[in-house]
Picture (cartoon, rainbow, N blue to C red):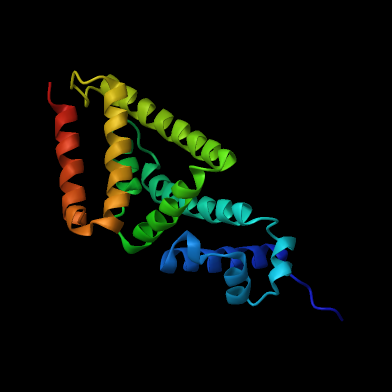
Amino acid sequence: MPKVIDHDERREHIVDVTWGLIVRGGLEAATMREIATAAGFANGALKRYFATKDALVEATFDRALSMMHKHMAGSLTDSSGVEALRAMCYGSMPLDAKRVTAGRVLMAFWEMSLSNKHLNARYQEHLKVWRGFLHEHIRRGRADGDIRTATPDDQLVDEIVLVTAGANVMSLVGPKFSTRKLQRQHLDTFFARLAAA
């Protein structure tokens, strides 16, 4: 009887291998030849699962985003306003080894998206959704009376995006300037400002 091949499992395995190569050596280390060798495939066999390197990088990027979303969603259950906003901020920060690794993959994706319009559009859509959630939680926090700062909502959202994205970058290229302790201090200071009239 012929062996049944689980194609979804194989796709996940290829993404696992790509993830590992990007983490160890950056995007340039994840050539289709290296990925195929590390995954135990003939070079041409990858095309059955991912037609191009861009498609494979996009699938790896999706995993990084999924990890971050899972961290955020796990803390968002039954919460709204400031509580949900805090959970989203902490979920976006590289506060453990898995999220630092996800940040490494995101950096590779950001680099590739500079010259790839499709990948750039995917990230712009992610930013739009993320910023929408942040705006909604700030709106609810103001309605609850927990957010009293006069700082405009757009500026608060910009600060969150810049702090969380910057923390992910600096945790890789300048970790002494983005320790977990410092990240928590930045977030605590930010949330204290929200409550100040």
